[in-house]
Image 1 (cartoon, helix red, strand yellow):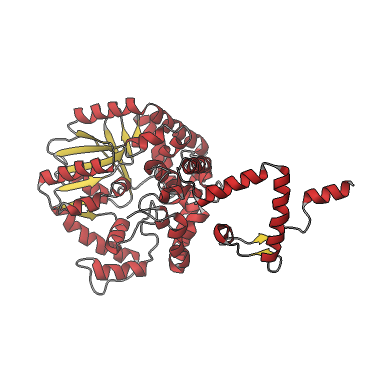
Image 2 (image 1 turned 90 degrees about the horizontal axis):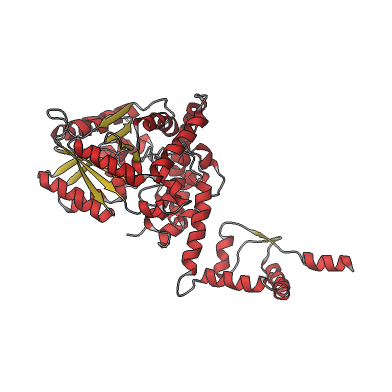
Amino acid sequence: MPTPKFAAAARGALADTGLRRNLRGATAALRAREAAAAAEPADWEELREAGRAAKDEALLNLDVHLEELERAVTEAGGTVHWAADAAEARRVVVGLVRATGAREVVKARSLVTREIGLNDALARAGVTARETALSDLVVQLGGDEPSHLLSPAAHRDAAEIRELFLRELPGAPPDLPGDPAALAGAARAHLRERFLGARVAITGANFLVAETGTAVLLESEGNGRMCLTLPDTLITVAGIEKVVPTWDDMEVFLQLLPRSSSGDRMTPYVSTWTGVTPGDGPREFHLVLLDNGRTSALADEVGRAALRCVRCSACLNVCPVYERTGGAAYGPVYPGPIGAILTPQLNGVERAADASLPYASTLCGACADVCPVKIDIPDVLVHLRGKVVESRRRRPVPNPELLLMRGLAWTMGDPRRHEAALRRGARWARLLSRGGRIRRLPGLLGKWTEARDLPVPPAESFRAWWRRRGS
């Protein structure tokens, strides 16, 4: 089912006071922690610049680094699979799971598997995917869409999670308390059985180090590490932009990402794995490298900056639009400002749903100020808005908005037409006004007054006043 346009999708969230309260509290707490953590290192701005430079170098030489990565993974006993799009990635992963005969897999948090719709594909193949991160488990049990990159269940409070566990979590005690420690304990007891019986695990990766073929996963709960060590078969799905050339680059990102995501000096669990080791860990390792629109974004000199993203969520926590609408309005995968520039490039700005995302911003610039790899999100938003306009201009049948703009261009292209339109428009505008404001315009123009009032134009235009004054 296609995602609705942003404005329509956001209406439900704007009317949900509970959701807005939960989001406001979660983002405010994270914002304060991140600001304090970023203020500690004296060289924070130098670290940001180093992160930006490392990601740009990796992207500009992506083909070289990907070939180096494939060679290193293969030499370490792993197998690399290339997927041009989401459908191919689903076929590869489902085929690998089927080959093991497993009917259930455990999953560590992975945005890219949500991007390709992997859980639904596995379900159609008769395989149950068990989310193991606490927030992802809450989202899965509730049938929700994730609302935040770092905390997908940020839209739910502890009382809601308790009620959800009592209804949906197998083995949850009927007297389950509503405090976070008790809820985490109930989830841990449920997941322990899943981990011990799992034969296949699926993970994402925060980074892929090309020189050694190593995947790197940062997490705070330890569930990812359980996925990496217990099952016989490990499948990692990652976007091709996750490649970093060397471990010297990783040193920079291991300082940037924790402070920008959770406000910590370092992540509690940093797991790395390279191929397979006889007698230790999985016996098979498969790395699925996904394109799915990334090379198209890479070809855009302005838009490619979005591929620097390290999925820290700092931009979400400072965005006034996201704080009010939550994540669902942006689509099922990437919420907030980064979603507004990444999703349209992966899917194409021509899609009606994604064409609205670059407009889901006030262009205040707060997101660019906190981005650890210096993505100028407002600059990319304006660039994508231009591409949206160009895509509409190429349509064989112009839409009403384009016809209106062409009419305005014709009118304003001639001084006499412009002045005549001003005189007539001012007369009609004054008839529509109430109390010195225009609160509702007819037809397509009503889109403007849905969110703002307009002042009544003066009885005399500036040009007319100037001519009268001059005479």
